[in-house]
Length: 79
Image (cartoon, rainbow, N blue to C red; front, side, top):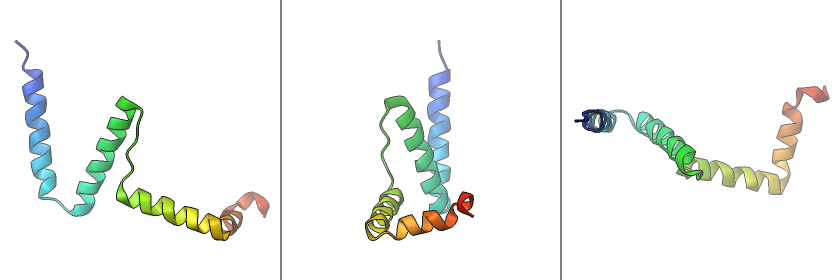
């Protein structure tokens, strides 16, 4: 008989219960790790809402040219 699967399921169940009682930031970090694991298994990465907002903001900055200015300013090779 194999007892590993029930032990893992119980471990995950306990982890989720513990995470539910923790701070929101910890819950989001745990969800990020789960997305990375899922992406590794499936080859598809589902972005978080925070990542989608950051990408949208970056694209808007690129459209305005401010993103390029910030990259130039941060590029130490140009000094």
